Image (tube, rainbow, N blue to C red; front, side, top):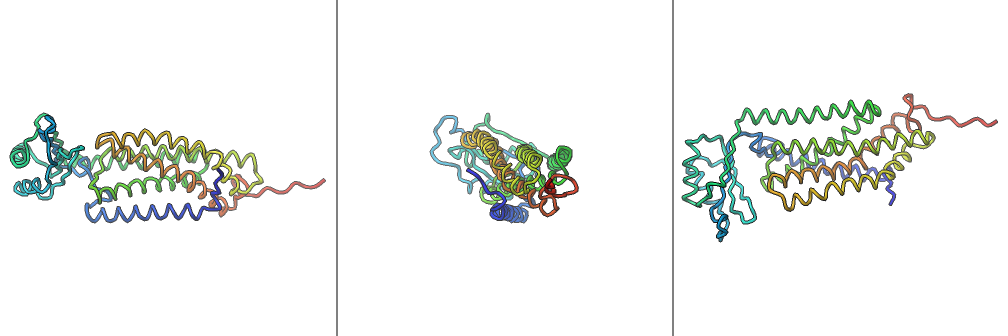
Length: 323
């Protein structure tokens, strides 16, 4: 199979543009509803999260799932109407409540009211997490700073290994991957109430590393082909480089994604969404490396007058004189 990357670059850019636009729209809607581009989890927003498991799960005697209407009634009586609720587990018998920061004196009557109204709950399975708003903000700022530092490091590395234009185009492709991944989770937050936490930042950093590695392989082959065939047009060189590395890119992405699919299917709630973020990012990264970063490089070099040479002055090779 041989791909005509340059000839069909309008199609590749069109697909990317649609995905990025949908992602930005989803994040804008999320900002209106949650005050953030993604629905923030406890790590970032701060507050208290209670996870309660019904006692019937332990004895395997549950006959019907929890009724969120009853839970909201109890929370309303406690003055916690704005709390976020979620049912977990295959049998929907685990209740997760995220609300404002509660102290011990406030949590005790809430748990007693829930236990009396919809319980009983297994006390040994109860999980309570509390994060202050200051700590949540610090975690968010630190995560975003780590992401920016990784982008800066990639620019420096690729500028030294290749040239500055290679680095900037690679960053553009990485922004494409991060935006699409964030867009998918913005949609999940709007539709399913999925929240992002510090693990999501970790997934973005992992996606950046994986995607830039794929882009470096393709750019390295482009550079080699330019040295081996200085008289060839950049479009032909890029097409050849992508096709030479295509099998490697597909195999790497496939072998990396398959274990993540297993985690999504069989993993717990926390690992499931972490793995899902990686899958979306890895697929977007493979796509951007093959179709976006490579075709952008060809266009940039052509517009810069370096379509036939990798020399800094962009001069085209002169034909040999006839003797």
